[in-house]
Length: 413
Image (cartoon, rainbow, N blue to C red):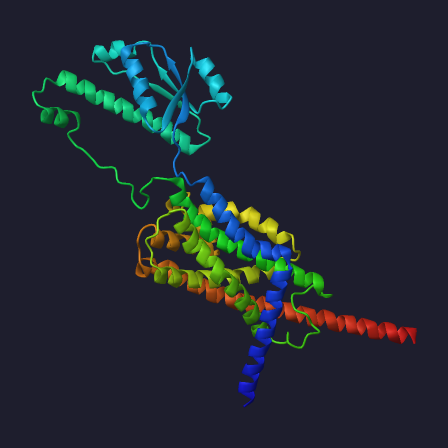
């Protein structure tokens, strides 16, 4: 009978702590911003910025020292492409460099004086391409356009000098081995579809850590002993009801926020969506649980309310790189790959991209799925340990304070 009474009392304490934590989340503007406003606004902001996926009509400058019919044909074909716009004609490279330095153009096409002469002599010639490498998307547009146009003009020359009798012979001579360019898992070949899905998972983790850290900082500020756990409240006597009550509060909030991040934003901006809702729920469940316990553990290690914001801002960009999305996982040093194992976002982002963009099922991401459950279990144990330590330190400080007051009273008497 006492066991059932203890379980019932523990559930009552957990419900009380859940209610207190939910009230604190609603009252604390900082926590409410990171739990609700940021997960809603940030994905919209990032997705709107990269909604076009690829860049078009990148302005370039032309230094045409040939002034020939073939050089003008080359420039017309470049200007007719969807990716490049010939915005300026310069007299020499110095003038073109000045336009690039003022950011009026993003690249330069330099055509040498002997461009047409060498082509008519059946000699190879060159078109020099100068690109602003500060933005990879513009560099890709400028370089690939020049490469495509030179290949098309080369095929025309092969047709003219080939001496073939039929169109079929000309097609085989100019392109004996044809190919189809099919972008795998990213039909538009865009930046948003390839990177923003990982950013959504990272936003879920970072906002959870920020919100839980701010909530813990508020609890420390309100407690005289600078501890997460109020010593005077009888309901804060056992560690597990405390952790359970707080976990249920955060999980209820991020059931909604996680659905918005994992399903709502991709559907709103037409990102790849190949996973079924059952598959997404199966993956998001351990990921959200792991993130919650990770945030609760970190909140115990950060003393002041503001420090958690500095910590999250500092590690956000490295965490994105360590997911292996914006930088190849095979090129990440082994030490940093080991560090990435500490964060749920590493495996959550990889699993989410494979499910939603590549059409994988749960068996294909079984490795990441099991790691997320292991992380959830490990961070649960570590959270219980650090909360127990917090409770021990709070009681110890309370006893020392009580002894000090008794000693002071005896001296006064």
